[in-house]
Amino acid sequence: MHLFVTGASGFVGTAVVAELVAAGHQVVGLARSQASAARLTANGADVHRASLDDLDSIYAAAAAADGVLHLAYRHGAVSEEAARTDLRVVETIGAALAGSQCPFVLTSGTLVLAPGHVAGTASQWSSADARITGGPSWRRRVAENSGSGTATQGEDGRGYSRGVQMVTWGDNAWVGRNVTSRGEGWSPEAVDIHGEEVAALRAAITLSQLRLHYQPKVDVSSGRMQGVEALVRWEHPTHGLVPPVEFISLAEDSGLIGSLGEWVLTESCLQQATWAVQLGANAPPMVCVNVSAHQFVPGFVDLVRHTIASTGVLPEMVGVEITESVVMGDVGAAVGIMHELKALGLVLSIDDFGTGYSSLSQLKRFPIDELKIDKSFIDGLGSDPGDTAIVAAIVAMAHALGLLVIAEGVETIDQLTRLRNLGCDMAQGYLFSRPLPPEGLVALGTVLRPVAEGGPAPAPTPAAEVVLIVDDTADVRQLANVSLATSGFAVLEAVSGQEALREARRVRPACIVLDVSMPGMDGFETCRALRSDPSISSTAIVMLTARADAHDKVKAFSAGADDYMVKPFAPRELASRVRQAIARRSAAT
Figure 1 (tube, one colour):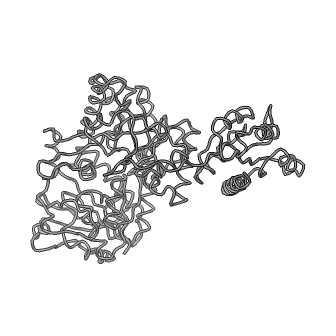
Figure 2: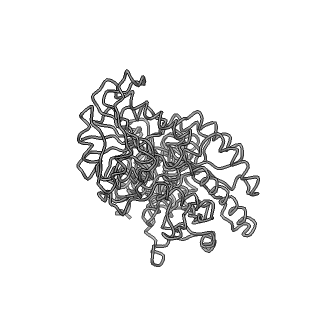
Figure 3: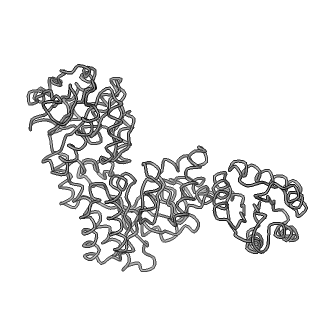
């Protein structure tokens, strides 16, 4: 059975998904963040990434399913904002299913479903009068405190279809702990009294059990630290240091994300201000904090303004990282908030870029400074041509928009080398450092060298072959740059014949891609000048022209060119012809 499940990213929801998948159902879970998507995937579900404001996308996913389950559970008191969010999603799904036979199960209250009976019930959803009751005997009280009924289109007035099951649970219901491994399902040991986790997290915020670790962002060329990202940890009294993936969803579901986010912002700014005073020029240039959809509201700007004033940190030393899904949920509101943050002097980044659904026409409206490429694309560098091409395209696009590019999750020297060749500005990942407490970060110094985990610094990989692109047209240079960098070359650019001569003598590239028609010193004259210099006699030259003219071709080879191509060119053909020209020139010398 194809089931669309919303609200499944929390503690109870992950267990429900695991049970449904184990029973053989095809589950598609709505995820509004990368962490939620990871938990759904770990439990065997497919993922539908969308903001809760992207009603069209949710509508389409719900309409395509055989059944829909909305897990509208809440820990503790339900906030007005949470209630509005649930109502918005429910009304959207209800409208999608109006007039259809697709059953829609809405659960609300403090528990979603009784442990152990979810999978069996799902198979019965094709019946319009199916009831969700019962469950294992050791949790009979859940069923005893539950009630169910059917809301028809006429009774409800919101357009819900026939067979909508309204299931509510009493105040004595139970809440399960997080289940992160596929097929683990429910067990008596995994069940705890409602509210225990929320109470513990609330105590962690008020009793100073939270800690910040910092991971450096490093310039890929110099190795110099350009900033740090603040990442929260929970120092649990019995479970030790708990990573954020284990409690951020709980904070969002319970309404504690505001308090947690405020704590992270304040502590990050205090630490940055302290470093600036104690370390001076050796301090990290900037600290960046992540902001969730729950925080990215107009009141966030006032919080940032107050925090900067109270901590004494310089605004330009503070960065805010926002995911694609957050800014694309309500573009108009997001642009307004971002402009206000920029007016304060902050640095703005789009996080996990490439995993959402950004419209390029919208992206150029955002007053941002950086794009962070998601780790999923970095993992495929060099092994997956598609990932390599996407990274190259993102770098080229970002630079065309005047943005810096940061690669997340860099773990190998090969990835770093390829990122450097593609022109990426910064890297962040275990290759340089895991997230560290403040004292550990300071001990790294200001210039970091890649270090393999558990061992000495790895030997550097051989330098990539350098190709110099010479063309006075920016669009041609950009296309050639992306084409060659994706194929593993290190690429430099020049806009004139004179600049080409200087760069060629300085770096002695393996190949020069040289345009014929340039103002001043044209390609033929430049080619002859290059060939007259013995220091660069081993450099291959591929000439480009917009004219398929036999006379020009003869003239190019007479000037010393190794190959001749007509624009426009196919990216793969350019890379292939450059590689062949290098091989021929190398064999000849």
